[in-house]
Length: 180
Image (cartoon, rainbow, N blue to C red; front, side, top):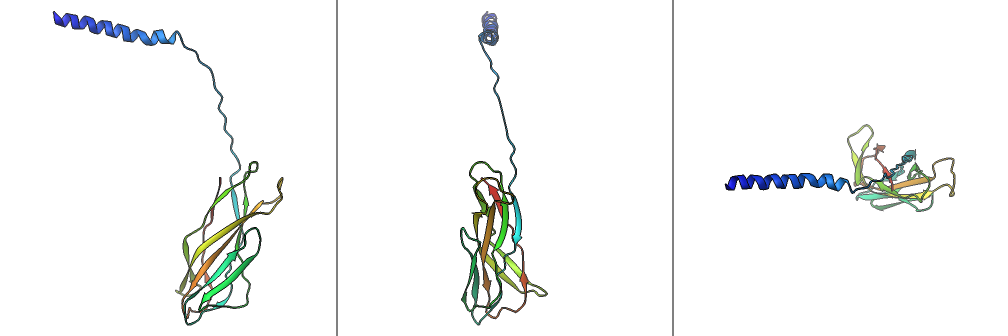
């Protein structure tokens, strides 16, 4: 007899729990909400000038050539250390024009490489470049601007071995810019 009593209790429980959602739906309300999204212009990066460390003479001791960017300016400076002597030649920071979605104040996050290797043209010799550093400045006054309103300048440090072989050394590096 206990089995028929258990079945009766189970049937009552199913009937009660099965009826609850229907009763709850009778006392409910709903409203519609709005959703929106806006797609903005992606940040654009265009190279306008290469990084040129200029000419120098290696010595009997290793050394460096450093190209410094000057914040809020288009100028750059160059220094040497160790056994390296600068030779009178043109040098320049790399420059990249940046365009971004206008509106709120713009902030950028710039990712520069930790180091790269440049190779001698026509040879196997190389030099390491590291210490990449950048500076962003606004080049247009606030308001509409016909061209890219920001300029990123990049400098770096070149490591020169004692008696480094003469020649032209070249390489590439990647700059990644994110608008925050």
